Length: 223
Length: 223
DNA sequence: AATACAATTTAGATTAGACTAAATTTATCG
DNA sequence: CGATAAATTTAGTCTAATCTAAATTGTATT
Ligand SMILES: [Mn+2]
Ligand SMILES: [Mn+2]
Ligand SMILES: [Mn+2]
Ligand SMILES: [Mn+2]
Figure 1 (cartoon, rainbow over the protein chains, first blue to last red):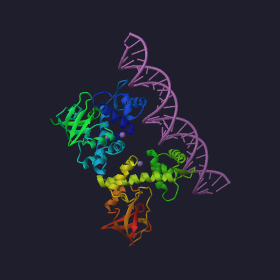
Figure 2 (figure 1 turned 90 degrees about the vertical axis):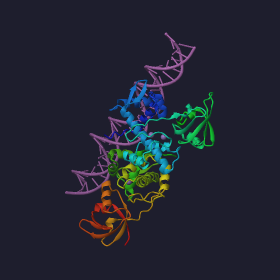
Figure 3 (figure 1 turned 180 degrees about the vertical axis):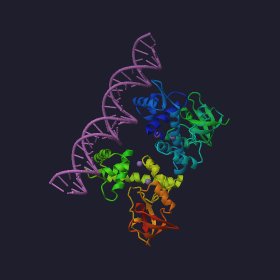
Figure 4 (figure 1 turned 90 degrees about the horizontal axis):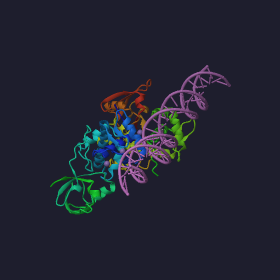
């Protein structure tokens, strides 16, 4: 019963999950970039995942892959580990939100289910990680995300920052400096239809943010 | 400079360290048993470790191996990780001393030096792990152990338990039930020269222990 | 010293996961 | 529609770490 997928396979499944969240297939090239593995190697691996018993992905030549039910469970297991670890590293070892990702990336594959349970319990079963991302439940269901991309807001609208997705460490430090952390209340001050820049006020700080940033910040719309 | 030895190599070095602590060479067969790897594979690997640049072990055909300075540093790095992790898991996640070993066995290879520093600092730089074993210092020196095997004590002598070495989970639980934990004060009540059994009193509990156990418990002799 | 058994090494094969180079398929655009 | 370019797949190679079977070496015992 102990499936014990290899670390490599766990990482493939995790990235396939992320690439298919919007309903699309995960392409060979997209996976290649995410995983830092050459496209030929990706093809090789996804063929293996599709041939596995039980199959972990659905694969059609030249059409990319999607996860099977089995594959999705395995992916969510890794993602749950990752996000609980990030929360735990911040809470117990004083890591900052821009430092935790790398560490969690390696630990996620080697902790036991017991470790997972103990972390979750010690933190009171948190719903989100330090970036505000939802943590899959213990029975491996991803809760529904109700937030809106900041890029969809317009002047005068108010919102609370919920989550910052796929940001590298540098951007995370930048946002922290601007007071744009999960939980922060913000008001849209201005919008430029030319470059889609948003001017945003958080506390006393005002920042002009490009689409590159506003597309990664997700908020709770307050009116 | 980031050497990044494989997990497999890290485990070989750790076990070679343990097998050579007494000054002997680590034999192919002994390593094979410890690592759960066939002797032929061990020969293969130690030849590779000896040929590495810089060499990690000294190898003479049919004579087993010892660690080079480089090899010893790498081994102590792994052992420091392992023992800090055990202490950390007990302190922060409520693991008991018979549960931590397995988890640390996997985590020891993937935590960063930053993680190591943070754990050590958070615990106030502990000297020993939950089994009482010494933790190599941050600059990778193994402190001197001054304890005596319990098997060397005789009736009327008093001692404090310092450490329990190489015990499996079952034995650890057994010892805990007998009040024989690191720190416990004990008195020798009786000794049988026939089977080398020692009768030991800890608090109100009296136990008769065979050489199999008394050889694994190390104590501070109190007089 | 000869023999027998145990320990070790050699030789050759296997598995997982990656890579490069070349072939093929799909998509795009004039 | 047909030519290119981009994406993907195939084919063949490589490395790390293991295994089994067979050969060799060392040691203990007569
Ligand atoms: Mn992360
Ligand atoms: Mn990972
Ligand atoms: Mn241990
Ligand atoms: Mn290990």
